[in-house]
View 1: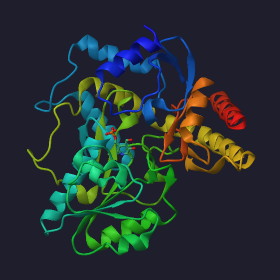
View 2: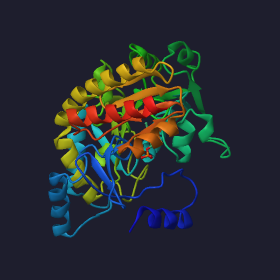
View 3: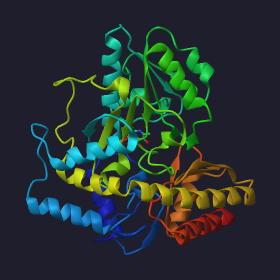
Length: 393
Ligand SMILES: Cc1ncc(COP(=O)(O)O)c(C=O)c1O
């Protein structure tokens, strides 16, 4: 196969809902990917913050081979399977939560969270959920309604009712919406798709206080920023604040689809049998990989903290070197963004031509979400490629 054969067949057979780059990924090792024409790329996208362990991880291969040798890839939730149960245990231990619902994606994890908030509020006749401008929570109807970006709603009205939007990092705008109808607030502790925007000091704590005062549930969506990416196992652990519900996906399944909705104290016991379900939730193969990722979570977070500091310093240096082309460098750990004053897609394409995969976030931010196993040399190489591309523009 060649890139062009695969791309041509993709264009002929897919719906036209993505704007894809004209290469097809064939294989990978460590933080490197190879396309169907044999070109090598240093990967700073990681399948959009998914492939925490990079490519060809031996422990993942062992875990999957063990599942294959047992012959059962899937059980449904009519029965227990030891791997999914272990994943729930490891998640509760790492996050400090008490109950877990396993599913297949970030959107699905947020759908579960939304239904929990609605059920919690139904006892007192409350249904409003506050979300934030520039947020992203997924593409299913509930999740896309929670997403505070008009471009994702256009053409799809009507949205799910009783969702309102406050300004991110502006507690007063939240207070203005806190009437007696609010049952919950959903927030990304570090906004991803909206442009890599960290919560300001005190913001999450302020949301916690507002929720406590009005008996509303606080959801942290860590689908992108969780699982070690920001330098702690979970992003909220940078602060002295806990959510009532935590949603995860992306890196959790080690490359297979897995999402999770975690319940802390006040949110425990909201669902009863029959309230919610997912056929593939806790799938055996996905759980086997999640066990591997979770067993390395502290190690991954610690590397993300070190390499993230190096990457951030390098991006700040680029921002200072090219003031006409770059704005602010921001992020936490290995979830970093560089604001650009030149077209982001041109920089992404330029980097690809020079063997580096990066992607965009928002309208004007170059996003860096590499595997969490990258080395010091990988970070230096990525920075030097971005430097070369910016200097040539
Ligand atoms: C913060 C956040 N929440 C939810 C989602 C949706 O996840 P998925 O695409 O797995 O449904 C994403 C995806 O980018 C995300 O970044």
